[in-house]
Image 1: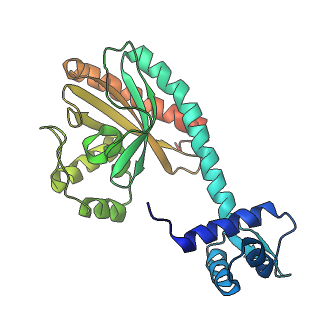
Image 2 (image 1 turned 30 degrees about the vertical axis):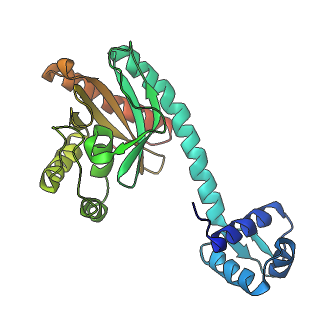
Image 3 (image 1 turned 90 degrees about the horizontal axis):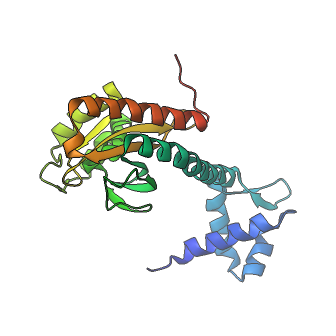
Length: 253
C-alpha cells in the first residue's frame, strides 16, 4: 500500500507536538523533522484548520482539541467492548444463542464482540470479521438509524449483492424494512446472511444518545417460530438498552 508523503509528514508533526509540553515553533518542528520549512508551514496551516494542532499567541505549536475528541472516542470504544462482553455473554447463555456487537463502517459491519451459548448455533463470524450490512440484522439496525440523507446515500452506493437466496437487495424493500425497524426498534435477518440462521438486532447508544453500535442475537431457523422470535426481540431490546445505560445513556420517558 502506497504511503502519501504529505499525510506521513502531518503525522510526524502531530507526534512531535504532543511530546513537547512547552510547545515548539513551526521552524523548530521543521528543523527537528528535517522537513522543508515552506511545506511544514503549509501542513501546519491545514492541521490548525482542523484543530489537530493550535498556534498559541506566542507562535508555539500545541495539541489541538480535535486530538482530545479522537482520543475520547477511542476510549469510549474500549469501554463499549468491555461492557458489551458481559451483557452479551449472559444473553448468549440464557437464550442458547450467539450474540454479536457490531459497528457500521461504510457498506459493512465489523464485529467487535461475539459470545456463544451452548454451541448449538455455530457461526463463521469472528471479532474483526466484516460482512455487508444490508444482509444482517445488526447491519440493518444500524443503517435504519442513519438520518434520511445518509440512508439514501447508503442506498445509492449499491448494488446490493445477495449472500443467500433470502438476502434483501431491492432498495424499495430496504426502505420498507427501515420503517419497520424504526417503528419496532428491532431489525430482522431471516436466513439473509447465512442459511439456516436467523437474527434480531437493536442499536446501542452512547451517553450523548448517538448510535455507537448494534447488538444482535442469532439462532437456528428451526427455532425462529413467532413466539421465540418475539421473545428474542424483547431480549435484544433489553440487552441493547442495558448496554446503552452502562455507557451513560438515559432514556427519555
